[in-house]
Length: 306
Ligand code: HMG
Ligand code: MG
Image 1 (cartoon, helix red, strand yellow):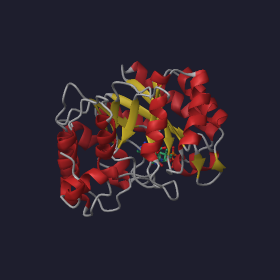
Image 2: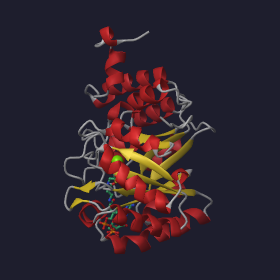
Image 3: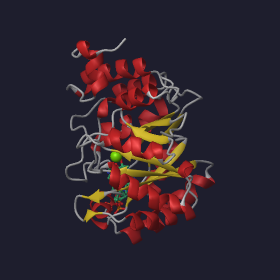
Image 4: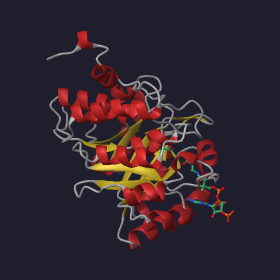
C-alpha cells in the first residue's frame, strides 16, 4: 500500500467541537484547552469562529479567546470567518489564518450562512481580499461534499465548481467536509478522483465527521490518493448546528493511533492528546466517544497493547 510518510493534523476541536456544545463553556476553559493543545506537538489549531454570536452563542467570546491564548510560535492559530464583519473581529484578535466556508449544496449553504451559493462568492471575495491584504493566509472549507441533509447526494463536479471559484480568489487550501458523516470510501474515492483531475493533493485537506463510524475508513482512502492534511477534533467532539444529523469529527486521538500505527509521522504526542481529551470530559460534562479516550480512561485495559 502506498502511503505518505508524514501527515499534518489540523485540530478543529476548539471550534467545530465546541460550537456544537449547548452548555456555555467559560472563556477561561476555552483558553486553557487551546493552551494545552498548543503543547502537544500540533502545529495547527482552529481556535474559534467569528460568525454571528446569535447563530453560534458558544463562540461569542472569540475575540477574547484568541487574544488571551498563550501563543506557541510553531502553531498556526486559525478561525472561521463568514463575512467582512467577521474579518474585522478576526483581525482585531490577530488571527494567523482565516478560514472561509461555504457548501457545495444550496440547501446547507442557505441554512448555514443564509445565502445562496452564488450570493456567497462576493461575500467571501471581500473576506479573502481583506485577509490577504492584511498579510494572512486563507483556507477554504467546502461543506456537504458527499451529501447534504436538505438536497441529498452531491455531485463531485459541483465540488469542483465551488473549489475553482475559491482557488481563483486566492485561497491556499481547501478542506473538503463530509459535514454529516455519511460518506463511505467508494464515494470519497470518486470525489478525490474528480478533484485530483483539477487540483493537486497538496491543495486539499479532508474533514470527516464520524456520524456513522466511517471517518477512519475515509481517511485511509484519502491517504491512498496522496492526501496529507486531515482535520480532526479532540475527543471526537463536533458538528454543525445547521446540518440536521451532523455529529462529531473524527477524533484526533483515534486518527493519531491509526497514522502512528502505520508508521506515518504527525509530530503530535498521542499521550498528551489523550490526557487533554480526558480533561475535556470534565469541561463538557460528558464522556467523550473516541476509542483512545476510552483507553486512556482505563475502561478497556484488556485491549491495550504494549
Ligand atoms: P445574516 O443574519 O444573514 O447577517 O447572517 P447579515 O449580514 O444580514 O447581518 C445581520 C446583522 O448581523 C448585522 O447587524 C451585522 O452587523 C451582524 P445589525 O446591522 O443588524 O445590527 N453580523 C455580525 N455580527 C458579528 N459577527 C459577524 C456578523 N455578521 C453579521 N460575523 C451570517 C449571516 C453568515 C453572519 C450567519 O449566517 C452566521 O453567522 N452563520 C454561521 C453559522 C455557523 O457558524 N455554522 C457552523 C460553522 S460551518 C461548519 O461547521 C462546517 C465546517 O465544519 C466544515 C464541515 O463540517 O463541512 C466548517
Ligand atoms: Mg465540520
